Length: 410
Image (cartoon, rainbow, N blue to C red; front, side):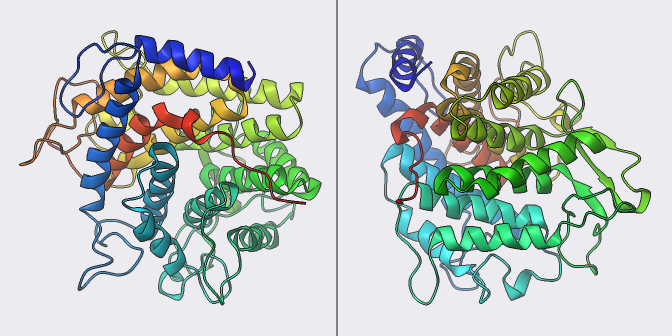
């Protein structure tokens, strides 16, 4: 499906779309009121999300949502969602605060390794900030002020940092990126999918943006390593990780939605970069099938609604409440890089957006978002992860409005 057909499919989706609004649904005709209702719902959720940010107020830290309870990485993830909010909706209300936040955490070494986070910074944490920066580069948004380099240069610095941390030793898994950056951090020996998938996605997007084959070669290397040690199995399940201490001879088979999602968008970008390679088409298709089979339709009366396993037992932690945000984000973006996936992805995003909006009915203002989208109404939970997940899935219905990411001028 080329991009023109994608927009035809999008029009068909809009024709079927029901009104998306926090706490209400009702059929609408195919016209601009549909897009307006989606923008309105996204705006409401974005407002609630931004109300949690205190970095521009007395006692807050610029760029960071309050800790506790929100770790640094989740702030980067939220700003990535806000970059997309601006691109998808055209609403610039939060663009300056988003820009200031992304600039505020650039370190003196011109990457995302700020001194305040060095005691417990993970490679996966850095990736979430890098993705926001790279989206800014891909869509030609305002560059950082002097003395900082461009968004692209910052992301290239992070890529090179990752390369320098990849160790091919035969007694430590034959490669792979560790979870943590510094040996003093708990979990330093763990090699997890979100870090390695983050490295792959960063490399893939840099390859497409710059047309530099070196980035592609690294993405392929990461993929091969991930399959070899069993992070990705023959059914394209993406498991959580393994450990240097056991030379990756055992795998933590826990399934989280953001793990398969981070690889999914990376492979879709590589499909696009390679002008429709059958190899990357197959990998993307299989990862997509795995993601939708595993993380959609938790119950017969919740067809196509996205969920996280921990919701079912009511034991998600603060971080895990946000994982579906990245699944929704990268499912939507995958349809731009590989448009033939849209017929499978868009119905899921539509059903999930409607369900998510239906549980954003809590709190004093009646717009606070919960986590269990398959329930009838708010579930009593609230927080950054809940709001970010709802925002990402609702605004994903507008992904076509941003168009494909640009390529760097040659």
